[in-house]
Amino acid sequence: NTKLILIFSAFLIGTTFIKLSEDWLYFNSLENKRLKFEKLQTETKLSALRSQINPHFLFNSLNVIFALALEKKEDTPKAIIQLSDILRYVIYDSNTARVTLKNEIILIKNYIEFQKFRHQNSDQITFTHSIANENFLIYPMLLLPLVENSFKYGIKGDIENTFINLNITQTNNEFHFFIENNYSDHSVKEDKEHSGLGIKNIQKNLKIVYPKSHLFEIKKTETKFMVSLKLFTNEN
Image (tube, rainbow, N blue to C red; front, side):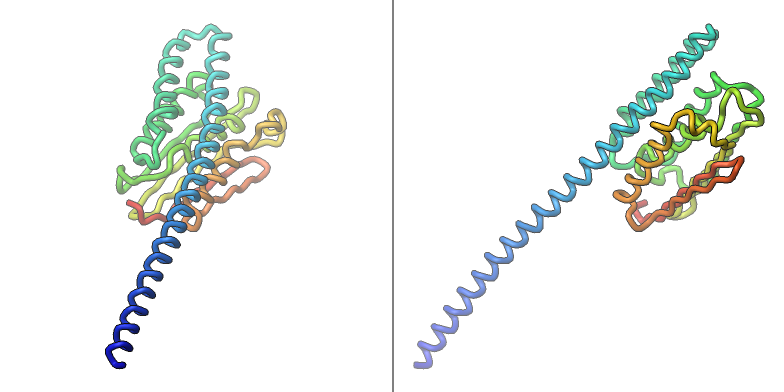
């Protein structure tokens, strides 16, 4: 009887273990499928948002080239070459999960120089940065739409005392982007349909990529529009 009980107990424990193993494998497989599905959904959302940013950026940049061509400026060929370099980065080099802060700063500098083809010497444009680690990684195309937005609604040909002040700081695992420009309700009403598209996409991207590690603030007065973006990450 004792041997039978031991044999039966061993058999029961063995079959129970096999069943638990099968259940674990099954549920683990379901969990992996769920995680893969969620990852695919996230990538699809990010891809859709990025596809909206690129055409938006392209149309605004072509407007600059168009204006130069109308005015028959000698710098038009230089502007076209500079735009092609920027587009190469936007379309190809930024098509990755993360990019270095060094490359993003180069992109912003190139974009500012590109925009200067159109604007007057009286326009006040300043860009300062203090970077502890140039290889600090961030999600691509977070910053350029904010800079583009300032040029589109801040620097206007029919407004006096126009300015853009841009500052980037990075220390340890913290990153801070701040930009401000002159503001008027008139400049925003001119393009009401597409106004704020870049900012809305950035807010959506931040919720997906930095769900609990970012602070995004927009402030405006009668004469200023200010945007502050802070990232807190342990990825670097």
